[in-house]
Length: 148
Image (tube, rainbow, N blue to C red; front, side):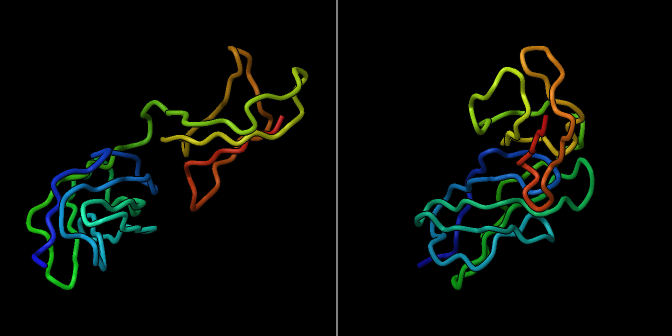
């Protein structure tokens, strides 16, 4: 088996606190680490010989672009694609809301999963301000609980 090759990242940019990323390439079956610059990725899962899913590490600095390298017993990928860490202020993205419905009067807790939610200041439902408590769960910054 030859040295691993990383040809792509999806997405190739993200927030500064643990976003999910998928790598594409070849020869990654026995990956022992995935590095974003000097920092190791977490939650690394080898899907197959071409794909790894992972969570980005904490950003080494705002607006930093780093090489992504995969290491296996056969060596470390050369060069590699780059990943751009971005600053707070990006538009948040919502992937899912659980539960998907509730009483019109409110009074429940929902979990919003998405990206760039760590810096969310408010949540609106159909243009109406909602949530008397908004917190992003540390360590899983993609989850926000809204309690009304």
